[in-house]
Length: 433
Ligand SMILES: *Cc1c(COP(=O)(O)O)cnc(C)c1O
Image (tube, rainbow, N blue to C red; front, side, top):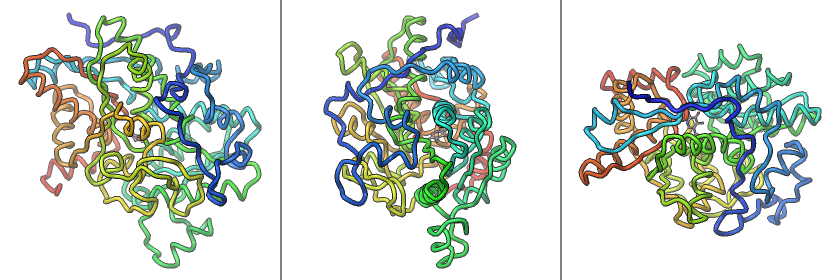
């Protein structure tokens, strides 16, 4: 028997998160106050975030301890997660390459997002916060935060992009099963939502609009804080548990990855998987390539501008220096809902700018073809977001075949697609444009 999984024991789980900020080629440009356009003071963020997360957002410490309670919660979400070899996919492709994927789909919420949801809920609970507000697009982030809120005894109010609220009713029910309140966005609950609904009662919503509504709700409620599932430095930090585990797993295997791949919406699963390895590369200890994959129709990293922009549509968030398509960009209705965001994390953007990370993009149909081959070979249905990373891994494996090279290719399996079958149904029925 050939083993296909490399596992770690709970004792082997990394006890610190890795902060890439002190290792970046250039210091990260500070977030700006939307009013004054000057660097924002940490205290200005206290209306929306707990102090511990603001400190992490700006920290220059390379390693930050993971609290005991969060380590305990990580076991509930099946950490440490296995690193799996896609031997059947390798055979189907006839490639000499070794293809590995990190199983972030094994969290009960179905994606990597619980890695930061539990950390954020924990720090809010510690500082006496009783309510969290947040947005969700396809529903993965809302699901993760609903679960983490329930675990740490917080109430969670989710604004869900209306198009997904109607298209993906089961994600909504999962959030409600975890005890959250779920509202379609735009909603009549906020001033911004009411303004949009007055113009168009059937407004489909967007992630940027839902962020604006969650922020407005948080600011009006004294006991609430706001929680974001991607983009910010502290979110990338929490996700580095993924890459640090993977580094230990590659050591156990005696393999060194040549390519590390992740899909990018806001950038958190990519960052979590690659940053620990990028830290090694920046110190000259690893010679690997890092590939960020996005949809052709939301090309922030491949075609966006590198400039200061808002994180939301109403212009309430601090301005962040990032690759962006503009905060009023309206993405087309692709099935990879988690990749429909106008910008990308400032840290990931800076690494693209300095050419440490290479961005590429794919069309929806070729991504779904890759997902189909993967599902038939490995038995796991990937989230449409994850399928972008799979497509890139397959292309690199085919290039290795052409050159007859035994490359080691690894991608982050950010989540499963068992609630995305509507999209796969369209593809299988030949109804995908
Ligand atoms: C949210 C999500 C993404 C995209 O978000 P990132 O912050 O870029 O990771 C990708 N895959 C899955 C499964 C998701 O839920």
